[in-house]
Image (cartoon, rainbow over all chains, first blue to last red; front, side, top):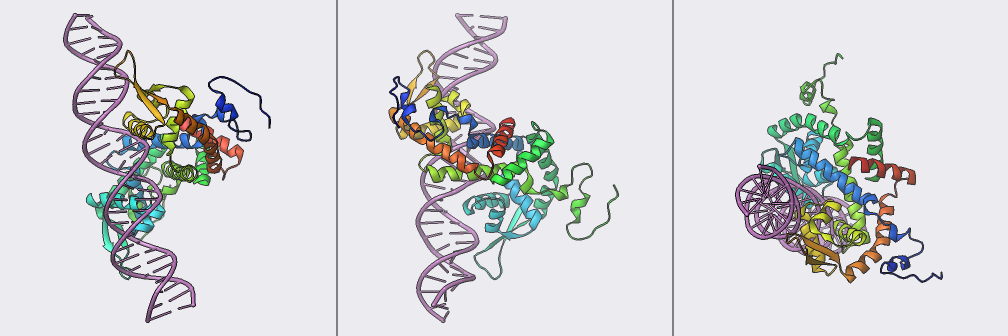
Length: 158
Length: 158
DNA sequence: GCGAAATCGTTCGTATGCAAATGATATCAG
DNA sequence: CTGATATCATTTGCATACGAACGATTTCGC
């Protein structure tokens, strides 16, 4: 693996490795993680411009509760991809606003059941059309075919 | 577009609207925002399993500094998609670990210049191969063609 | 049935991420 | 030159997000 000597302040780069694909050509903007983070940020911003007084995770919790009805806090978290610590904070805030109610599980004293209040139910129903507008605006730079492809690929990833 | 009558406790859904695309068929898991959030979470988790003592935003700052050299805090933030408040925290933590150094801009007393230390430089060089492994593992569920498509579509979105 | 292991919820600490307000400085309009 | 405006950095407050540790409860293995 003899390598010719090079000089200059940047030449450490060229000594790093042989079988990794060119560390010197590392471009942050092309990394999946960076682009994923930026796309997510843009979506959150669009969401906020449409809804404003509710965050995407809060809406996700309400929408899922509307979909499946009463569940335990933990299970709700699994369904909407939040760990136990995170889901607790989200539910606490929704409860403080009267959108969800908590009750004890009969038979399993560990479980805390979460359900939509009437107000929470109304909120979900009025928000769903706006959520659809948010989805549309987020996907606006893409054709509908591209959007479908993106959804499919992201689903494979996640 | 006649719709048959249905019954059951959930039929309020069907009275909500006419021209919005089926509120009753709202499926959280198919929304771009939800999938984006999950894919991002998975990536962060993979990143942590490979690197651990540095977060993706911290690495992004180091990589960008390595790429372009000394810049102001604000401009660095723009380059790596962080607002001023966020970038400050990231830089503070990198500074506390001796990976970056701060200096005043001559001529513009508002600006704070950020640069890599020798240690920060070494860190970037040793981390780039691992970052490439992280990218590879994140994209592992996809073929290389699919990965390229995903990158292209996400770039269009962001 | 009993001790070990798993599950559920809570709390703490740390790290993004952003809006909004603020102080210092720079730039621009007239 | 000067007042209005813009830019840079900082600070505060709030909301995810997750690891780790914890107590209470349940379930599992034997």
